[in-house]
Length: 312
Image (cartoon, rainbow, N blue to C red; front, side):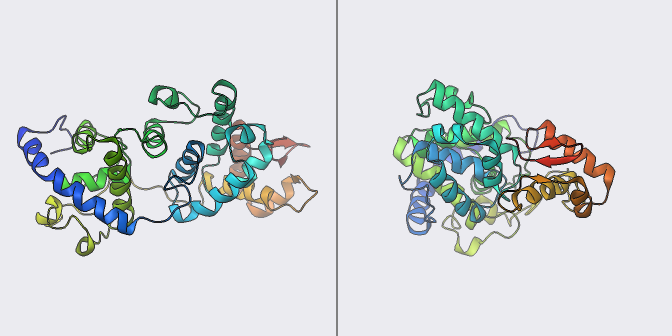
């Protein structure tokens, strides 16, 4: 397979079909023995709770999400509760999860679920993906993990594990390719219940064992069958040609500093002065740009000239 391939070859399809039953068996056994006991798993939360966990987990390590998710769900256990919450509290509760616009989109999503679906998440993919801030991955994950439907869930971890195990190639990131999508559906177990275990297991294996740079091949349940390992792990760790963006000194860092200064205010105070912001970030041009962008995104309000507060 190359990055330009549009479909699986006949030989690849044949080899995949020979492997998939054994891979499913060994992966399911590994999952039941090694799955992390996360609070939104194993039927312990509502479909809305599953959706919240998936939105929080986007581009964020799972270990950082658990505490935020538990506090969030204790405060706003359903869509209606979140929809009615003050926006300032929602942004503050998002804390250091990163990409705080996700919090606003989640609240917007909650409003639609509350008003149009009577506080119950819709059960079909088309309605889910039409919700604010919900894309293909999140809609598919909710369909599988919350509703137990047979659907291919495709994220970075799943793409990496499937590409390595069945095709012997390294996933380079970027958008999901037609080959990756075809592969995900071809290996998905036919029975709905088994497909849920499969999606969870492949994702967990990618997070814990079949990691991007230093996979634990010696402890992998698929090591005896993995085409990538048998081939000598060609291109291990290769990524897309676009370099990863640095964080220090970026607008994202400055935006985070501004929002954190608002979260750190003592009770009874709601405004951070411009002078205080200048102390936190002396580059005035970049500071002004980031204040304006936060206001544009609805994450802060500008008051008294250049002072800021969370939306009221």
